Image (cartoon, rainbow, N blue to C red; front, side, top):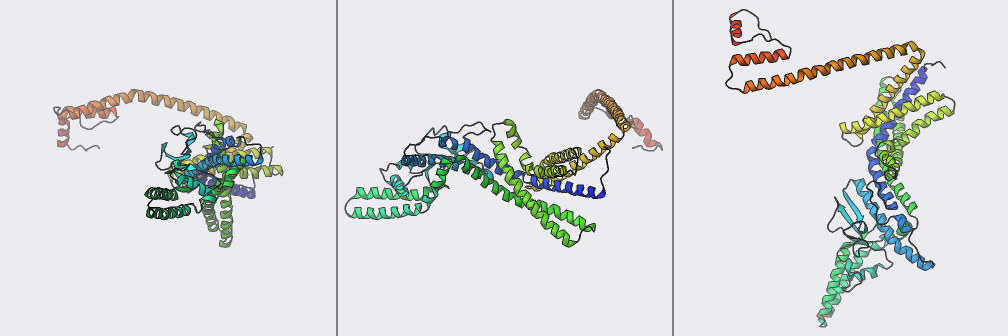
Length: 519
């Protein structure tokens, strides 16, 4: 089938589509840093679910799926009690994943770990459930105990009483369910106040030992008021993690991805709006549109770019989190590339081509040509985005500019190559001639390379030797002017130059003559 050059209208539509692809790629790549952070945060949720960190190979003591397999009593009442007890373990895992995810999003180096996963604490430590780490070292004062019980006040009493069952929990942070945390500190303060009043009464009654014990318990309550913490989970949520770990994890990933999407929408609006502004100013300068049309187009493009940014960041962070914790090394490596950021853009860009092919507007060969062009553009856009970020170390700006340039240039180069290939198909003679020229050029390049290699092998050692001898002569205070002049002249000859004076007598003769000085 003979190739038909595209009409002006088709060229215009093609150029617009190319610019739109480049703009979408820029928006997508500008979100690479957001996707990286929020995707790694999502990966922490996957680690909590499976109990395995595929990147480091670490196997945690328990994951949410492991806890969900724990047996429960056949009796419905006892089963509910068992699940509530096991929900405390699920809460430990879920909050640890959450804290690490938030640290990654904020760029903090602090990480949280269950004591069961650290060798210095061992399994089932009777005081510490969770700790914070910095560079692998436990942060002083970060130890905490998580307690999900039915009666909060009874728990606090067992900790504060001098001979209380849970007296060992004094001095560490006490993490409570969200519904129990509210009012916990106030309760401790009221108990301390009452105990001190009772201690005064006991002292007046001649019972100093009782008074001292009551004051100690009041101090314990004061300490508890400072150490109680909100775990960030209600008892109901903890039970849901125990009974439906996969769904709960999916909800967490969806929430984190939504937050990434909101960030991505902001970046998308900024980048897309800027690109549209430049394009519309150029169109106005060319007289193609007026200010009213340009303003409307700008608003529409900005809204589309914002939606594109949201979709890219939300989908990309979810995909990256899953790929990053895949058991496949290949998929884990893929998570470190720009692929998660480009997924949505690929679907949109290639979807348009596939739609035209399905409608019969383009042939199979044209479809493959468009797929190749867009694929090449996205790949080069990703590489240029990385270079752009290095050149312009401003969050998302460098990546966006680099991605825009890379995608546009690659698309142009690809189209030029494609047109050349089509022209060659019309002229086999030109193809043969090009191949012959290419063959001769390669042979010529090989000869020149060989000559250059020989020259370097021959001349460079000699030049180094002569340079060393010249500097030795310069350092020798006993050398005379004639020896120095001869050395300079020999060095000049080595570099292909001929100096005017070979000795002091030549210089004196020149001074007495009318000869011109050659520089």
